[in-house]
Length: 467
Ligand SMILES: [Zn+2]
Image (cartoon, rainbow, N blue to C red; front, side, top):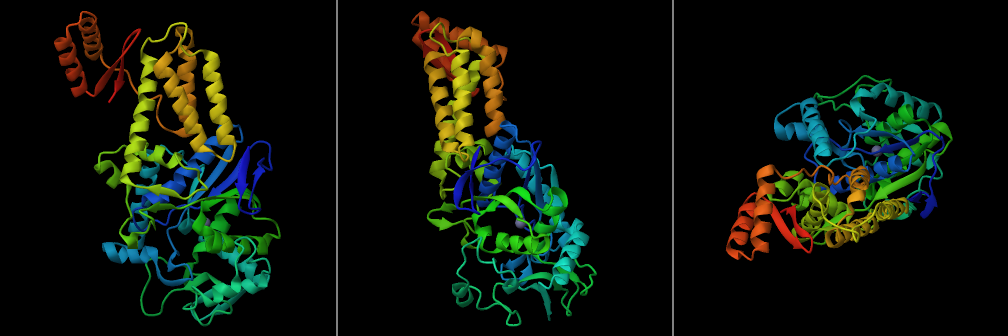
């Protein structure tokens, strides 16, 4: 399987270190508010990666974290903890906010038909591991303490700028000028923040440096290494994590172990809405509920994500979502053929099914080319709709739909049969049509349409599909 590796900026052959599993860590949500569709785009892309690894037999051992403490409003370790901010907004404790949005996130994963990680790990349940890692960094001389916390001295890690190809001088003069003046270098980041003296935080712990809470970056290093070892096969996240969060994870982990933290780095690109980056502050933070209340299905949104390659910037609009919904309908019409008889000697054969399966798998193994995989799926839908399926290939077709669901998660094989009454109506309409009784034929078709069933006429009889 081929994957683009941010570490080398090239597409490489991927094989795990161990023959029986692939260790993979994906940065999860900060649970202080509803995720917007930009967040979900990244998670769905990672889900396709996990599904593809599974399909090709690379057995992912997958850890995703829940950031329920320590992620500050600004990446430069300034401002409020997002959880404490959410608590103030909602008149709850930070613990209650974390619990609510963690549950919401897990339900969202289920709605989107994402696989569940082997472990979903909370930062607040791994404070001891984080303290332990900071102690090791301290022993090796990578830390210093200032008035608001313990910081990582990035100048002690000479390769700091390498991963993101950072221009440190530019950065020093740029975005981080407002950063804490006590820091030795603008890129230094907090490992442990002290609790404020003027008020009591909801979440705080004792540590060798004083009462406080861990910085955002240290949790990922601590939990990834605890469950997956010192060198991961793949570390994944959004592209915006490259210059700060992942750069810091590498600096922390590699300073302690002296080994590469991850062999492959997988990054999903942004989505844009009307040319803008999606952000709550821009008022374009569309949620999954906005999608369903506008009358679209969650599967249509999932299909929209797959329509662009994970490394390209994709664009969301209600028009592109509508086009995805229509495309999904054509796939469901194809899937409805498993309940019907259509196609004589010209119908698709078992060999055709095998060829489509192989083409879709090849596309995914080629750096997760979901657009190419969908082109193959559309070609299959077209073939089924024009030629039908040979009776002897029905089982192969069923199995193909199940397999496509395993890799793409579009729930094609879960489309059920119509009921007996509806089947009777389809027959009545066919009889009327053959007898050229157009008014009965039209009336029955309308009756079926009201029940969400469409009918199409072919040389070999009527075919139904869901509207
Ligand atoms: Zn992370």
